[in-house]
Length: 129
Image (cartoon, rainbow, N blue to C red; front, side, top):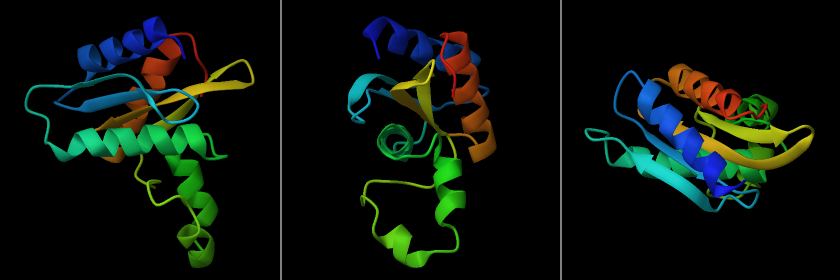
């Protein structure tokens, strides 16, 4: 994920969010490319957004939702995951064609809203999820 693309994703989330959120854009290893925390966002949203992006970047799933659904009934599989993974909604992998190029995590609103905002931001930047 290029810095320019990551900043466009962050800018979109900050501009379109209905309330204060944190957004974290990661490369394919889950490492920071760009991030922001809006004024008034709860402090824990920073780490939650980071964990959502990290999970979507590093897991074999396209989203934190998909990963949660995949392991819902299998406690042993859930326990074997990277301890930094999260199953909260709002983490989406970014794809350029079929190639995973990074991920975005949004935190601060209800999970469905975080996920929708992340999806809209990726699509606005020209990525699929």
